[in-house]
Length: 393
Image 1 (cartoon, rainbow, N blue to C red):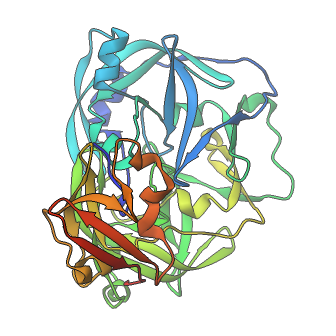
Image 2: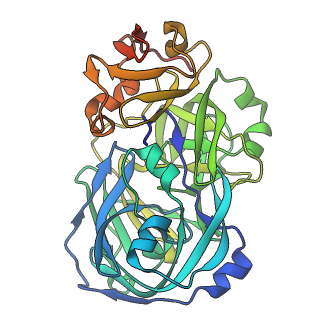
Image 3: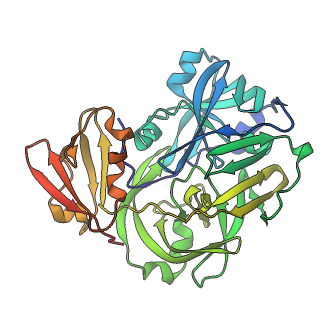
């Protein structure tokens, strides 16, 4: 099963009992193949996810990179196929809630130039993440990669590099941003419209541009006054309904972006309680140089225009092998106006039949098309409706 991506996915993976669980984590041995490594290509999947090739215990595997994951995570089924044994039960807090996981010690992980021996990883069910992304996620490479190396990410070239901190020289022409820590998270200031700057978590695991915690957006009448629409969000721990708005402007490191889609969090005491979550789409217009162990980062604006994904259909679906099942329809959105409703099954989009290959095709991104674009939707009951894409929040 997989999902078209008309919602923001925040993995938000953290150990739910940090005082106990982190005490069980031994420091791994960190190795680099080269002090000045060649950049490694990565797949910028649907423009919002970094997948790179790596190895775990010698087995080649794709890895989803997530700076907001406090520990590297292995899908439970993949962990079993690797023969990992002797796991210790733990609680794992995700953006959508909490669930159980297991800690495994003594694991070897390699990503490009960077290798760990004796790494402790968490294993848990990542099937919901896979459903949301439309592809397998055997491994989520988390905070250890960022805390034990200098990470350079060039989104335009789709290249990533891991280098030792000992030989690091700051990039010329880039803006340095000092970071603060809150537990395993790194914080930088972000300014929304005319509001005072506010603490934001740097989170490449957030597939959107910006998300506001329930505590923050409810504390200011400004956000309640914005035009909004319902949507779905979540990640590890489950999915839930949220409100979506468009922020007039967002400023980061002195660079201003206009008309930024945002999500208003619906869960209290979440992994970024009281703060903002700055996601990958906000950083995509930069070359990033990250020295998170030194609590600093550098941002270099590229010539590429800032493009923020915006749902223009108002639809949330799950992929069921040969059709999409509609799970949520935004009231008064384009999909609702076309007559689509929860419980309908979509069997074709724009004349293309939904098959197992459909989630990885360009047509799967139809909900992000230009306003005014008509999209013909074929339903399992034989009906055909036309959804005319529009900006509705």
